[in-house]
Length: 358
Image 1 (cartoon, helix red, strand yellow):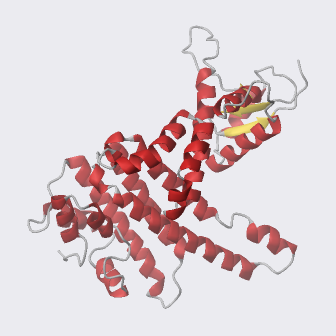
Image 2 (tube, rainbow, N blue to C red; image 1 turned 45 degrees about the vertical axis):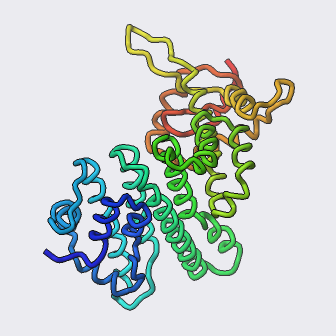
Image 3 (cartoon, rainbow, N blue to C red; image 1 turned 90 degrees about the vertical axis):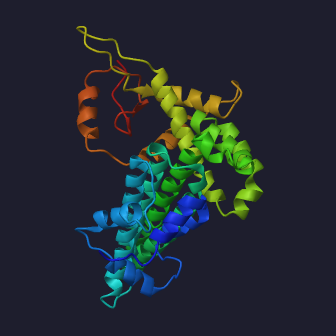
C-alpha cells in the first residue's frame, strides 16, 4: 500500500498534542510544501476504487501513524481526507493535460470537504481544539469560489458579445459560488458558536462571537445588528465582516420559521393526524419583523419590504420540484383575502394569489 507523502504523520501528532493549527494544515489542498510535486504525490497515492480504504489504513490502522479515535469520529476524518484527495485530483486533472485549471470542480470537491467537516462538529463530536480547521477550510473554500466565479465571468465574456445581451446574461449570477461559499461559512460559524464547549477555552472569541450566535438562533435582528456593530473593527481586521453580515439572513430565516411554527395546525378532518398550517399571511411576517427589529408599534412596516425579504430567502433556498403540484392542490381549497402574499414553508416558495376576495 502506497505511503501517503503528507498528512498522516501530522494528523497523528496533532491529535497527540492537541495542536489545532497543525491539524488544520493537514486539510490544506496544497500541503505544507505548497508545490506541484506534493499535489502529484498525494494524487498518485491512491485511486478512486481504493481511496477510502487507503485513507482509513494510513489514518487509523497503520501502527506507525494510526490515531485511536471513537469510531464515528474516525470515520468522519476518513471521509474528510477522501474529499481532500478528490480536491487535489481536481486541481491536477486539467493541469496534466497542459491546460489551465478549471476551478469549478475544485470548488465543488472542497465544498464537499467543508460540509463533511461541519458534519463532524454537529454529529461526530469533534473537539474544541480542532476549531482552526474551520478557519482553514473557510479560507480555501472562499478562494476557490472566487476563482470559479472569475472563470465563469471570463467564459461569459468569450461566449457573448459586447452588446446588451452580454450585460444582462454575463452579469447574472456572477458571484454565484462566492454566495454558496458564504452560506457554507455561515454554517461553520453557526454550528461552531452554537456549541458552548467549542468556545469555552477561548473567552475572547466567546465575547466576540457569542452574542452574534445567540441572536442568529433567536431571530433577534436588532441584537444581531448591535453585536455586529460592536465588533466591527475586530471583524474587519480578521476579514470576516462581510461573511458575518450574511448571518442576518439566517437570523431572519429563523425569525420567519417561528412565525410558521406559531401558526399551529390546520383543523383535523375525519380523525386524521393534524398538519401544520401551510399558508401564512404576509402580515404575520411583518409583525415578526417589527418584533425582531424592536420597532415601536406606532411605526409602520413596509409590506413591500417584507415581501422582498421573503423573496430573497426563497431565492437563496432555490425552487423545489414539488412546488407547482403543491400550489395547485392548495389553491383550490383555501379562501384568502385579496392579493395577499402566501408563504409555503414546506416547499420554500412564496406566491401571489390574485383571486378575488370571497
